[in-house]
Length: 89
Image 1 (cartoon, helix red, strand yellow):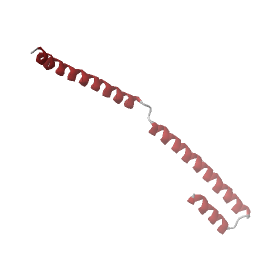
Image 2 (image 1 turned 30 degrees about the vertical axis):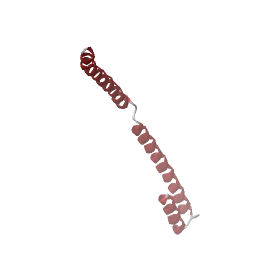
Image 3 (image 1 turned 45 degrees about the horizontal axis):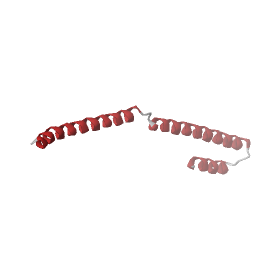
Image 4 (image 1 turned 60 degrees about the vertical axis):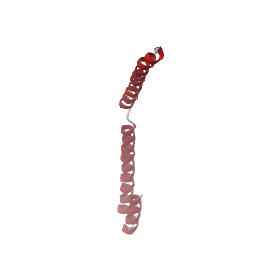
């Protein structure tokens, strides 16, 4: 009889303790994820900077090609081919 009373009281208490522990752990994980610095924003910023840098390089290369065209070193066909090659990459 004593064992039966012990199990009737102990089992619900143990279940409740495990529930509280599990919910505390899950709350901690959720807070950690919510407060973690976002890698996506840093990655987007790096990608944006890379695009700006490549556009700047592309612009300067096309400007150089245009100067060569104006000075007569390149023909219009050569300029068009070089520009297309730059834009395709």
